[in-house]
Image 1: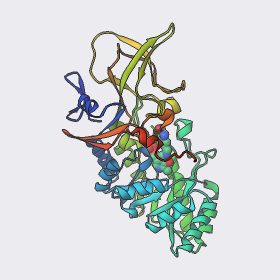
Image 2: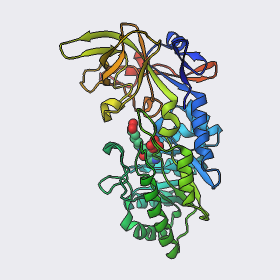
Image 3: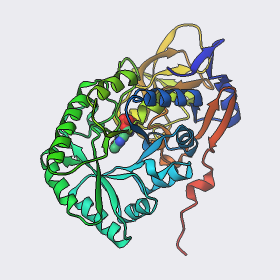
Image 4: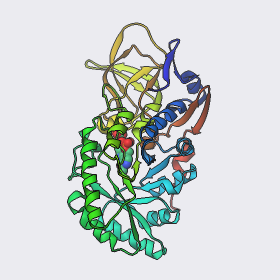
Length: 415
Ligand code: LLP
C-alpha cells in the first residue's frame, strides 16, 4: 500500500500533484511519501510487538538524512556498512546504542569511529576482522561488542546478485566453523560476545528461506550455550521482498508471526535490518520525455533520467512499473524507455506497453524508494537528482539537485 494515486487523471503523492513538484524542482526527481514511509515502518515494527526487538533500518536502501530522521523519531535503530553511513545515522539523530555495523570490509578507521560512538554491536564477517576489532579496541582501551555473521548456506531464491547466504557468497562466517570462531572470540581480551547475526539476501518473496536460516541459527545458539556462551541478541538481518510487478511476498505480519513462533520462550532481543520493505514502494522517480524515435524494430522513448539516477534495471534487469504523470486516453504503443547515457544497459523498461508518448510528457517510475537514489552516481557527468519528501499537503526539498560546480568541486588541475 502506498500513497501515489491518480486523482482526476493526474498523479498525486498524498495531497500534492506531482506536476507541482516537477514545475518547482524539475526532473529527474525522486519523490517520497512520508505517510507511506511511516506506515511501512510501523507495520513492520508492530509485527514484532509481542517480542523484545529492535528495528535497525538498513541505511543503504535509502540514506537521505531526512528519511533516517523520520525513522529515528519512531525509535528506529540503524544497520550500517560504512563510516559514511555511521556519520549519516548519527547526524540524522540516530541512537548509537541501536546501531549495528555489518559488512565484510570494515577498515580500522571505521572500527575506531564506531567504537568511539559506542554502537550496539559489530556484525563480524571473518576471523581476521575479529582480530582487527580486538586490536583497535585494545588501543582505545575498550571492549567491542560483537556478534558473528553466520552464513547459513540457505538459498534465498532471489536474484543471484543479491543473494548473500550461500557458501559461494563472500558474506559471513561458514556455519560449520561458527562454534570454533566463537570460542576464539571468547578468548580475546577486548571482545565481548553479545549476539548471533545472519542476513541471507534481499528481495526474498517466500518465508521458507528465512525459516530455514532461523532453524540453523537456533541450533547454533544452543550449541553456544552448551559451550558457555550466552548471547543477548539474535540479528536476523533484512531481505523481505516487495511487489514490483506480480510478486506476492509475505506481509510483514505474516513474516513476524512465523518468525516469532520460532522464538517463543526464547528470551533474546531480536534485531531486524529491513530496508526495501520499508522504503521501496514509498518512492517514485519522475522523468521527462525528451524525444521519441523509432527504427524498423523498435520504438524508443528517451527520457531525461538515466542509469546513473536509477541503476536497478541496468544492473539486475529489474522491472519497475511506469505510469504517465497525466493519464492519457487512446491506444497504447510498445516502447523501450531509455536514458541519455552512452550504454546499451541504460534502460528503464523494454517492450513496455504505454500510452502514446510525446516530448514533454512526464513518467513516474514506481518502486524507486529503495536502492534508487542511494545507488545513483555522476556517470556521464550527470548531476544527481533532487529529492522531495511529501507529508500530506506539504512538501520539502530534502536534497538539492547537484550543481555543475558540485561535479568538479573536489578536482584539481596540477600546476
Ligand atoms: N542487512 C544487510 C547486512 C544487508 O546487506 C542488506 C542489503 C540489508 C540488511 C537490507 O536488505 P533489504 O531489507 O533491503 O532486502 N541493490 C540491490 C539490493 C542489495 C541489498 C544489499 N544488502 C537492489 O537494488 O535490489
